[in-house]
Length: 351
Ligand SMILES: CC(C)(COP(=O)(O)OP(=O)(O)OC[C@H]1O[C@@H](n2cnc3c(N)ncnc32)[C@H](O)[C@@H]1OP(=O)(O)O)[C@@H](O)C(=O)NCCC(=O)NCCSC(=O)C[C@H](O)C(=O)O
Ligand SMILES: [Mg+2]
Image 1 (cartoon, rainbow, N blue to C red):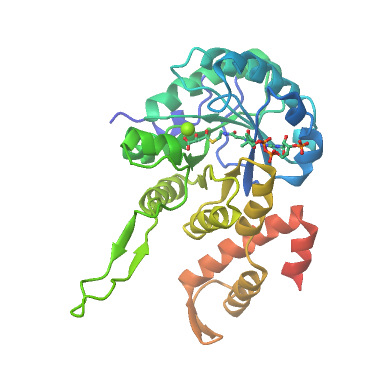
Image 2 (cartoon, rainbow, N blue to C red):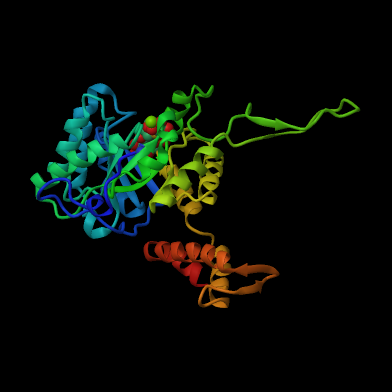
């Protein structure tokens, strides 16, 4: 597979386009809150909602009716100018329509030319391989040059095709614009021909069962997680590329308990954040993707016991060494980020 040389990998893909980042900006992205920009009532909530979330995403793709795509795009551009995104620190993203759709070109060109000064990330759906990223990369670079932007717009891919899973490492490495990748369980289930209409979470039929008993009594069985492999594969690909993995949508809006379990599974496996589709899911995402205060205190005990990150120590009866020091650093650094945005948790972590 032909690859760019290290030097050319970081070259702007259009004369006049901003220099790509060599290190990604460090941002808190516990929840990416989806907003349907064509609905005036919901769009009007954005200025009040923005300070309460880490990212607001103007969705132009699935869930936006075909006859509302132009209105959604116009709404997204209006959203860009409804809040001081760059000044106040909440991320402003937009999910554009897929690359082979009749709307992709207008989505990307209008967003970059009319909202690029506020836009942090373009979310690319149904990515199948690095070629999708390469195409969008050069197209956005030309638009950035035309718009006179001085900061590169980043890409976030959705992992929601079987081919995309087979190539997830190449996608993660395809451009310095890559900021992260989310699991898209609905499209991925359809692409894989999985027999479920659920959007994330478990399924009562996906179980393991114990061996038959001599007395013929009922055999115990336990539900398994159908997303374990894909999330773990996604995390490995992203962390190898130095970007972040995210869980995507949880569709059963009324079941916040199952939503929390799905979010928690993703957090524990290494995901940095999740999507929130409804206001009720924001608090769940915040609770799950902010490290637990007791975990933070224990992590900081480990860091204090091995200041240079090497050696061995026993803390509360558990062996700690260089590896657990690195685990503790992940939790402590995340806690610092959360504390910078969330005074309640700052107090809990300092306690
Ligand atoms: C899912 C919804 C359609 C539900 O909307 P609604 O029926 O209006 O819910 P409620 O009556 O409970 O609403 C209560 C109030 O909250 C406001 N609201 C609703 N949704 C949002 C939102 N996302 N952000 C802000 N505010 C919201 C309502 O307006 C009510 O306000 P008020 O009347 O003043 O009290 C709706 O939540 C929705 O459309 N959510 C987004 C869905 C979405 O984006 N889906 C696509 C992403 S998932 C996907 O594409 C799959 C993925 O790609 C894959 O393949 O896996
Ligand atoms: Mg999808």
